Amino acid sequence: MGKQAKITMARTDLEQRLEPIDDLGGRTEFERDYTAILYSHAFRRLKHKTQVFFFPVDDHICTRLDHSLYVAAISSVICRNFTERGIPCDATLASAIGIGHDLGHPPFGHAGEVKLNELARPLGGFRHETHGLRVVDKLEKPRSPKPVVGLNLTLAVRDGIAHHCGENRTNCLSPSTGDAIDFSDTARMPRTIEGCIVRLVDKVTYLGRDIEDAIIAEKFTGISERHLPAEITAKIGSRNGEIVQYFVKDIINSSSGDKIRLSDPASALMAKMMDFNYSEIYQAPRFFGARERVGELVGLLFEKLMRIVCEYYDNLKKYDDASDKAIKILGKFIEQRRNLYFDEEQYPDNEARCKRIVVDWISTLTDRFAYDAFASLFLVPHQI
Image (tube, rainbow, N blue to C red; front, side, top):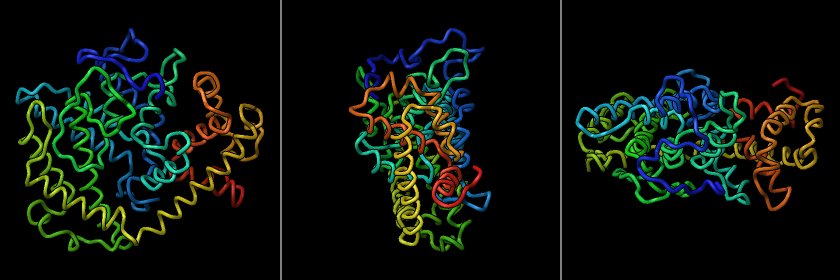
């Protein structure tokens, strides 16, 4: 994140912001962060972004918004239990990190992220954790008269978003230490106990819900309860509620003031669940075609938009005069962040600047908008 990549700090500085705020509107620092995220455009768009399954027809299939709310709620419960046991913990901080942790996700879930990472390699790649920090720091706009780009969140929440990575298999987490936070190192543990809770709960939340969604979509996935490993169903159950309850109880009973962890038996069961989910859902050959087509869609959309942005560049009138509504909306996106792209950030050349703009804009799109923009640009005229 350039000059903001590292910030020297102490534990007492976790409430610091990039810009000071005099009036929190009767809220605590972290309550202000929670509501800033809740009312942001980026959070609102999560309701139409893939969690696992693309374009779900069944309303009961989880979206990225559902997942974020689940993480916030479960993390808050764990924090309250810790507080009752005498472990200092802020449930509101955990909730704020929880609802904001996936703001950096592009359309089409991890399939979209993999393709954007490939396309953004000259920019350093694309990871939703670090991009989430870019979203809250630079791409979103605060609900304030002051013209500051970004949600201006506290250091603690920004740290939790950047370091929430839930795809690893570490089930014993301790807050990182030191005098600086390196936002570019997503493998690093969060600085706070609340951030560590969110990081572990992220796995608890998506593993159980993704299994339940796969069962709901049995006609498409071919997965039913009878396919689940017997050890998991015998010791935990097959429903998301049973799975969440098992792991949340274990986290509460197994953790201490400086370690958020699962017991060894629970950790072994989680490893089996991850093996099952990856082999039967996330990386299953039966879904390869869908993932490949999504990647092709994102790639073609990127190439088309690159040609347009490299041609129009900062001539906002050209975007506004375009016949395609998606291009008009892209122009508005650039207009609102003109200072960011053309004054504040430095690029080696104009092509890199255009690529940054296109990657940022595609990452904001919902699944449906990305699909409709593609159809409008490549197939037939369509009102988005």
